[in-house]
Length: 117
Image (cartoon, rainbow, N blue to C red; front, side):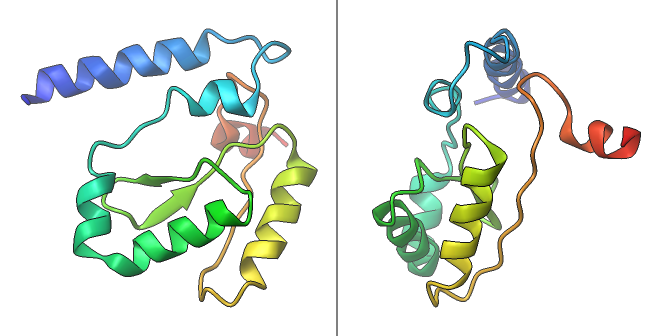
């Protein structure tokens, strides 16, 4: 796949996600738009990433998606408290992973928001 086609796919997915208004979108709706074509290859090359992914999804926190080549795994939640609860559970599950919660209303840039606060 050429770079222009990849960028087009990302732009299209981004537009679809950003078109949700914050009141109508749910975590499940947003998660349906998020994919990583590299994820199956990462799982084959690094079974530890696959094991953590599977374990966290079995805990009920998912769907989980990896970013890029697997250095970060994330899920979308409907509210910050739910995400914080999941983060605590995952950190105490003995998986050897760290967690972080980044919260922002749908359509808002969480990095930009943190600078404004």
